[in-house]
Length: 328
Image (cartoon, rainbow, N blue to C red; front, side, top):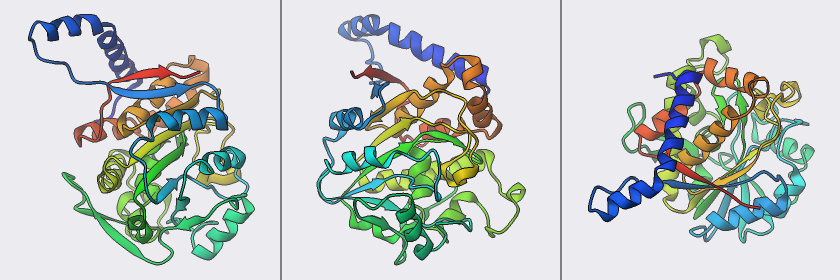
């Protein structure tokens, strides 16, 4: 089920041709023929700052009400690529009754225990608002509808305390997942550190060598099913923003050891469709010049990361056909 760069670019080209056929599709509909599938909307700004982050959020926030969880990756200590705290602070301040949420890690690091995690949050400057470590007091199982690997996934117990979720993602590469977008942010990031993350990674022992962790298609499918549980839980009260800056081939969990990014910053995307926003983000990476995209594309393809997108489509999680709407 993996996809090569050539196959992926052919898919993207087909999508572009479909977009160009818009007037013809409208004429066919007027003649009584079958209506084509509605395309998702993905809003995009090449400017990465608090003003444009807020502007994009305003375009997708319609269903966000009540107590709001802002799910982002707060990173290992002194990580050079995590989202700028001043930008996130300005963003969070505009969302009433909002809290940043995280969970502890499966691997032994700066966020393995709640105590160490709280200290890491202070070191990294996440002190301007409450941060809820959702598995600090236990877990809850969320059902996976239509999954082939899971019937339920163990999540941080506090997730059920929130009415809505805003998924604010630093889009980048990932050692095992190929890339980390909105789907990975909630698939791994909402799963609790001891049970859920072990489920999603498909390992019985987190101390096993990295070479023994399954990865590839199984990991991508497990992540998609975990993310589906979160999306189904919140229904229409979940929205997604991907910030494409400082896109190392490594995740923010790599901390200071993360490789220096070799692809230029691209911008911010926002959508109510999790598949569309991750598809658009990957498309924007592939659209860069070969020498710019090479390292990140290589990381995506060697880890079979594109399976994240195709399996989300199989699960009916969203639409991989979208209109990219530029916002100035």
